[in-house]
Amino acid sequence: MASAATDAPGALFLTPGMLERGLELMPIPAAHVSRGEDGFTVVAVNRAYRLAGLGVNAARSPMLIALGERIEEFLDGGELRLDFDWTVGDAIDCRYYRVTIARSALTYRNRCTIAFIDQTSQIHTERTLRREMTTDSLTGLPNREGFIDMIEPLCASGTRHAVLIVDLLRFGRINACLSSLAGDELLITVARRIKGALRARDGLARIGGDEFGIAMTIDEDPHEAAQLADRIQRALMAPFRLTDYEIGVECSIGVALNADAVEDVEELIRHAQFALKRAKSTGKTEFYQTQAFALAREQFAMETALRRAIDRRELRLTYQPICDLSTGEIVSFEALARWRDEDGRDHMPTDFIPVAEESGLIVPLGRWAIDEAAQTLAAWDAAMGGDCGVKVAVNLSAIQLQRDDIAPVVEAALIRHGLPGDRFTLELTESAIVSDPDRIAGIMHALRALGTTLAMDDFGTGYSNLAYLQKLPIDVLKIDRSFVTGMLADRDKIAIVRAVLSLAQALGMKTTAEGIESNELAQTLAALGCTYGQGYLYAKPLESADALSMLDARRAAATASSAS
Ligand code: C2E
Ligand code: CA
Ligand code: CA
Image (tube, rainbow, N blue to C red):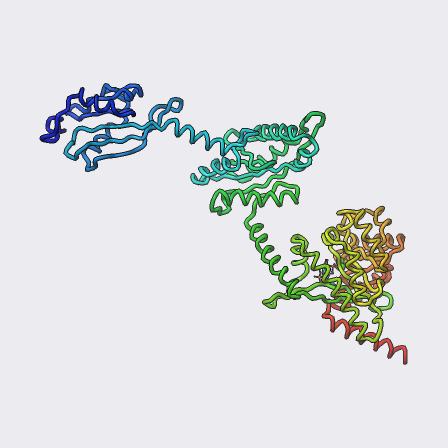
């Protein structure tokens, strides 16, 4: 090792006293050290350095103990100056320095000056700010930002983990009815109870008004997440006492596992949120499933295409005859929507009606169907030279009935196409009535006042409240296809069909059996007293022109047989 004496031939020799006076001019801790055969010597320091307690005795100086190697490297290297961050002390008393080691010429190979900028309070301030930014002030839990900070290391370390999102049901109502203070109190208690249900290493955050996020590591089996969700639900089940009320809090929980090929934390949270949305409709804890996401994407694509289809008139109605079971005569045609998209693909209503319902497109679609069916019927009348003798039946979805004011729409269509109300049948489902009985009853009475026939579609599949049914102006019960198909070989089905038929008789309603595919079925149903039948036995849903031809042919046959 070189000695101080060999340093820098011709360099100005400063005494330690002179050096110290020079350092004293610096407002920050600074020291001058020199390297000799037995290691470092602290040649001179300033007052700020002494106060910082960085050590003057080379053998015991925390500065030299921690930085000695770096100083050596610097002196042996080819730089005039080196800057780096240095943390000294323990967690409780920790100081953060920006350190600069410098020499005035490369020829100084054994002496340098070291200066320290204390950044401790700045770093503390930044950390406090960050903590405030990532903390929910009400519960003291991390907020959404903090939640992300919490999951990031889990994602980075590659440990298997899950994100759960807990959403309180009815919280908006509770908040509105009680004071917001009581709402706050409830949230704090909920947070405490959820915390109690977690394991020590699970993290909890409040990521929205009434939404909590949980980050958990999975040790063995994703089932652990379901178990945790269960514990949370149970923890919230016991009523909460708030001022004068005792309130039960229910919650929905959505879960996403990082195993589902997630790209980042945000995506993981999005997945959990997606599962949550499903949980809200199923009422169960739901796990995010890759297929579910793909399915939703497909539905969005379909929604976009369907929106365009309505504008571009890519939809059409097909018509399936409904016949009198005793005479075989066609009494009406049910209008069934079809959609041929721009690629020439046909979509069935079972695929696109649910999308239309979810997106609200059912309203324009339903209005279109009503008008289109009326227009077709008027065209048939015109072609047959007067009343063609059949009704047309249009399906009304429950969502459409909730969202739209149907009676005026039907009335306008009847007027526009010059049809009396008794040429129209409207098919409603039980689910429509269950959704909002009073409103739907009002609509049904308004439709009845127009002279239209009302049919209860898919009867038997829902939760029929018989007492209620009696009060509604229903003319026809349509027995769902699921009871008719295979009925001859199934005693339970026959029993149900019989029960429906006698119920309808008792209530003075007519009946239509759907899905009749064989003569034998038609005869049995006729014998059991069913009024009408619909199914492939008579015809599949037909294009409008084919339906008209069928009508025409029947009319010709009837005229011929009555003439002979
Ligand atoms: P739905 O009202 O129960 O209509 C009867 C369905 O059974 C039709 O299916 C019809 O093609 C089918 N079907 C008829 N006879 C037979 C048979 O003998 N065997 C078999 N296997 N099936 C038969 P589609 O046309 O696919 O319609 C499905 C559902 O879509 C309809 O069920 C109805 O609820 C809904 N829907 C169709 N068009 C519209 C519409 O314009 N508006 C609304 N809101 N819903 C519609
Ligand atoms: Ca129907
Ligand atoms: Ca049906």
